Image (tube, rainbow, N blue to C red; front, side, top):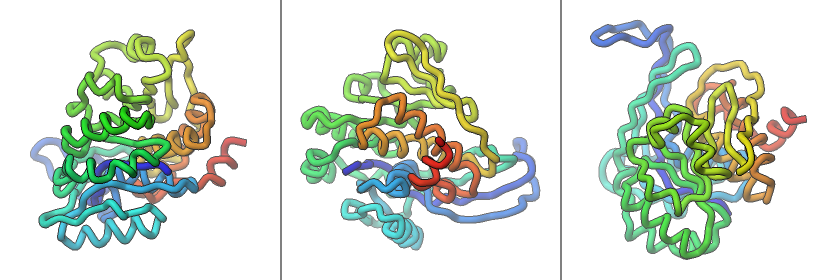
Length: 289
C-alpha cells in the first residue's frame, strides 16, 4: 500500500494566448474546472499505474468537496481518511498559455488537516510500503508524518512544493526529495550539480523536458525525457512522483524507477488537466520499449 498525505483541490483553469502583464486584461480562450491538489494528483497517478493507494487529506463543505471525493473514488483511490470539514475546499487558480502555467494555490480545507488525525492513523503508516508528502498542508502535520514514518522505517518521498515551506531539518527523515530546478536553487542556494553531489541517491532534480538528474555517489546521472506534444504541463511533477513511488513499491532500482517516472511525466503533458493525462502502466511500458 502507498499512502499519500496531502492536498486535494479543484483546479480552476483559464487559458489564453499570452499571460497578462500587471494591470492588463487579456481575452481568454477557454475555462474549465478539473480535480487537482498535489496530494490528490499523486494518489491518482499511483492508482492509474495499478497501485493500491490511499489519501489522507481534508476537503470542505462546499460543492467542490463532492467533486473531489467523487473523482478520487472513480480513480480507485481509497478515501477512507479524507475528512470533510466546515468551510471551503482547497482551490488552485491556474493560468495556462502555450503549454506553460502559472498557479495560485488557496489552501482552504487542506490546512485543517491535524496532527491528531495523523496520530489516529498510525496503523496506516505502519502498513505502508511508501509514504508520499508535499508541502500544501500544515508544517506540524508534515513533521508528525515524518516522525511516525521514521519510527516504522517507512521510506518517504517528498515533493518540496511550495519550496518556501521546506525545512532543511526534514532531510534526515526523507528517503527521496524531488524538487524541480528552480525549487532546488531556492532550497539549497547552490548549483544543481553541487546540490545533488551533496545528497547522492536522495536529491532527484526534475528538469521538465530535459528529464531528471541525480548523483549516484560516484557520478552525476542524467536521464533524458522522451519527446512529447505539450498540451498542458500542470500535474507533470505529480505524475513523476506517483510513478516513482509505484516503481519503488515494485522494488525497481532507483535508475529504473526514474526512467519510468520520466516517461510517465512526458505522457502526462499531452492531455489537458493535472490528472487528465496521467498514464496507465501499459501506456508507459509501451513508450519505454
